[in-house]
Length: 150
Length: 154
Image (tube, rainbow over all chains, first blue to last red):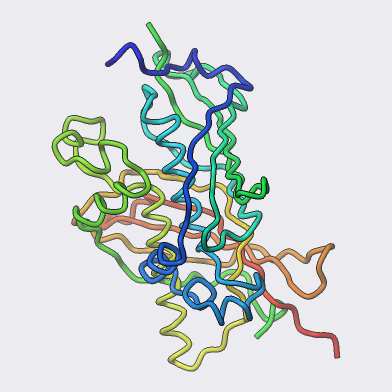
């Protein structure tokens, strides 16, 4: 393991990490939706206009996957981690539309040693995926086991 | 069919899915480039002992199967509430690694209906969604949320 990696001790509550920007295109939105979420408002502009959201919008799972990518680039790939057990809360707050530019802010919400495994600590992260208007498009709370430093 | 017509319970079988190595790698290269999702050799040396799917890939496949099942039911003459918009999810658990070549069975069950104070035209329906392996072991679960239109007042 490289000494450059981030360990549990580096994740002090309040510390923030930034990922992106990432621009999402209409073609990206439609390609993801064709494969995983083929609902009309993710596939077709006219159907999008008639939907509750008022325009073509990305699948929430696509938005989550983009947030994951930005979290990986800004945190996980620099961290001595042990995979992730899940997500406590995921909220799709604003539709993500073609040509939106997304940035991820990850904040350390809490960090505590594991009671059962002395070699790891549990870090609770809050993700805020911002669009170019400064609106939070997605909000996620996820806890990740992280190895403790020497 | 409206929010009022939806009943709690009634687990729906969404069918099965087998992930291939190639699609696990393709998804993860785009969205979750951790070594145990994108590199066969490195994955073998990781704590998983082999390539595993991104948890977000498993979630996306759940969605794919849920839509396909809904289309089959529609074709068979079942009616559905107009919906399709979701405010998010809760308590997503990646319980066991999802591996290539294994047959997973996915399901969905309505567990809660919530009337909204802020909106009288839609209600919130919560579902417990799962995937199980060939031995029936739970590998993945989450609580899904969807808005459904309410019956208009007459």
